[in-house]
Amino acid sequence: MPEAEPQRLSYDELASLVAAQAARIAELEVELTELKRRLGTDSSNSSKPPSQDGLARSKRSSGSAGGKRGKAFGAPGMTMRLVDNPDSTVECPPTLCGACDTDLAGASEFSRQRRQVIELPPPPKAKVTEYRVVSLVCPCCGAVTVGDAPAGVSGRVQYGPGVKARLVYLRAAQFLPFGRAAATMADLCRLRPSTGTIATVIAEAASRLDPFLDRVRLLLRAAPVLGADETPAWVDGAWKYVHVACTEKLSLFHAGRRTKDDIDAGGVLAGFTGVLVRDGYAGYDHIDTATHAECGAHLLRALKGIHDSDPCGQVWAEYMANTLLIAKQMMHQAATAGHTRLSEDQAGFIRSAYAGAISAGRQANAGRPEVNAAKLVERFARDAHDILRFTTDTAIWFSNEWVSHCTSWMRSVVSAFLRWLGGLRGWGAAGAACGQWAAEGGVVAAA
Image (cartoon, rainbow, N blue to C red; front, side, top):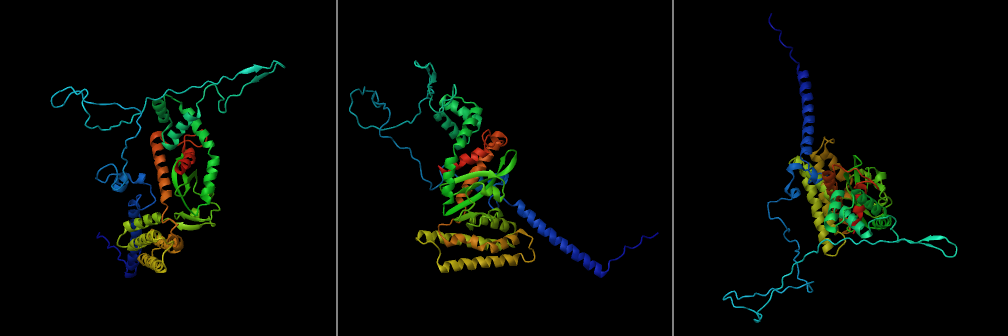
């Protein structure tokens, strides 16, 4: 039997099918654009840390630009200088003439050069002091009275404050694991404390920080401008966030979740009345006593991520980035000239350029409110006052530069711990570290 001809679709059915396919193609194009954007994100155009850039990291983050290694061009040098009073001197005269082998004993001096060698003596032997607590019998009543040992001398054998200070320094300032800290003490000081002893010393040091940390919190809360940020860290077998609040000279860390209660747990941001420079995370929005300013570096990375994914379609992101950078340069020039803010003409130019970039962004993403580019446009429109806050006063930072240094430092700490220890498992008095590092890190950064 001849095969039956397939039923032909009517014009209306074909039109409906084409419309459905066109809608589906549009959805897939949006999805493809988003996937390309995600694949193209790294530390330069998103909030990803440099450690997640992988093998394709940029020259900037890889540290290898093909040039000479060593001091960067223009960086100040560190020339070693002769000291005026060396600990010892050694005369090095010639004994025979270099031309005719004549004995030079008693010959007149022509010139001399000073050459110095800086050397360390061998590791000193630890000083052991024995305290003999004597008990005496009263000749009157026969009672026995025990003498008092100095404060801190409570056991049969213990390390003194100098040894403890060096152990804390190796752990909290040089980031050495317990085993390597013990080995370093053995090599340099001829002492080999156990890892358990080091953990106890670190816990003791952390417990003594409360008065210092209270003072740091007080100074941070009184600062006119304060930066805040957070970075993930592996703590107690799970990812948590290390929160940082800092100025140019003071830093305070604490760990927890990313909720507003955990943000406030540091004892700095709740009730802060100055200018808070932060990123766009909504967890900071509840701090209504502060004047908010958004970090320019975070914004530039977000704009770069949008522009990199579609350079032709998202050219507005380049307009906005240029606007922010021009405003930053204007503020720098104003500060150099002794002014505290931009002139009315300069401020008007920046506001006009800013509004133009938003208009271009809305036009480029019309009808696609769900894409990230459109969401970023509306964020710039909604938060314009906070984003341009740095243009109102030269004392307000353009970006969270100091906070970024602190979080980068913490990410380096976490990365090193994950390599050396296979994961951070400690917290508090008996722990190996991130919680104590968060506390001790505040000390190191503030020192």
